[in-house]
Amino acid sequence: MQELPYEIEQEKINGTVIVQIKGRMESGPLDKITQTILDEMISPERHFLILDFSELRYISSLGIRMILDVKMSLQKRSKEMALVGVSSSISQVFHLLGLSGSFQFFETRQDATSHFNQNSSK
Image (cartoon, rainbow, N blue to C red; front, side):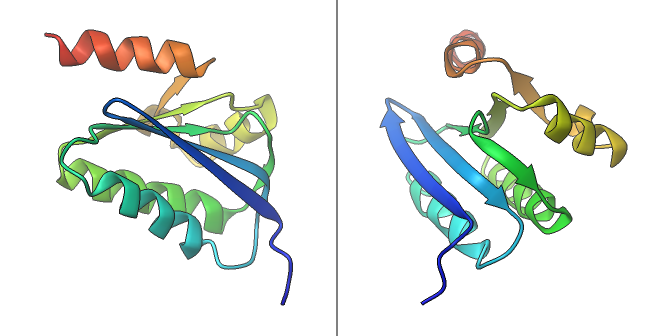
């Protein structure tokens, strides 16, 4: 069996699911990441998704497409998503594709969690 170029770790904190993607999102079954995320987010108690890219070294156009698909799926369910720990090179890919305004970017998980908590209490 082929070794995947990425690893996925996840944790749940109250209504937030945090998924950390490590390595390279370039090949292999990226739909495994999508399915893992959407399976976790289907629960009505889950309102927010944080994708932690702090250990992501590379993302291909297919990886960006996967992230967009997840975002659109969550929007249909009135759920929010944020990206944290995005390196300057990966941030530049989002910018070059004209997608930097389509996502919420935060430095840390705590920053994103605080943002979600403030917005959910309004």
